[in-house]
Length: 304
Image 1 (cartoon, rainbow, N blue to C red):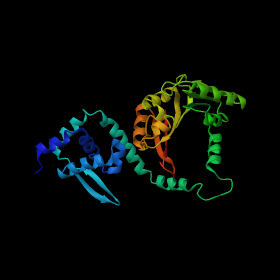
Image 2 (cartoon, helix red, strand yellow; image 1 turned 60 degrees about the vertical axis):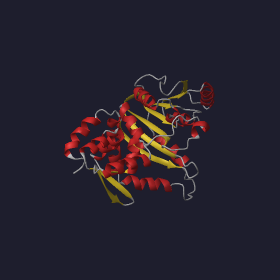
Image 3 (cartoon, rainbow, N blue to C red; image 1 turned 135 degrees about the horizontal axis):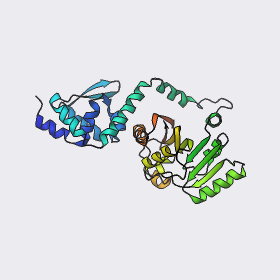
Image 4 (cartoon, rainbow, N blue to C red; image 1 turned 180 degrees about the horizontal axis):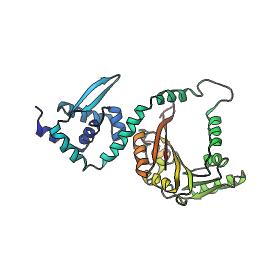
């Protein structure tokens, strides 16, 4: 018989309790727990080992990974559930878990990821990612578009070829001045650059059909506030596209590129989007660089 005192001591730790609540809903691997909790592998493995020793979790081999499931006695399950309500992160954990489980159901995703990885590997005259991107941009059917954190405005200029109106926001006065001159010089009178912060963009509420954050979110002081603001400026049915870095450990990026955050995990970004009010959320790894530090590009889409 398991020691009640020892079990109570174990589940009194917030991290272990969060793990138990997740494993009570579905069996998960260490990698999946890492993505949901945003913690390192060694920390999670240590907690799992303690819970397994106490008989509160079980594990079994699945391919190359161990998959863990909850084994909390009924007499403790009610106490654990009540205690979990006092942990603020638990609600976000539930959202992240749902996102993980939805990804599992997408059996075709692995195939298409592999297919995308092969694009451009073999030379075919005239075929390139640049050509494909331009073709897709020209097929977009959004009247009013916001490019949040537009920088020098390259993407804004491409979008302006198709949209009725593009509003590009950037925090740098010199960048805004330079980009606006380029837009005028190229006859893009439907492209307007505005000085502003992506956390509080100077754009009227519910006025945009599409908002884009392209490699801008990891520069925000408060990424959640930036996503909240994107939701605010979109009309009902409008869409947000986020292109950013997948969570990485290349800390030099803070000094080299003035990055505030070292990317985001898929689950963390999905949780933030849902908190902002977005639905029909999708995430995927859109690109993987081959050279050090091997940055990966995370794509996320949400609908108002």
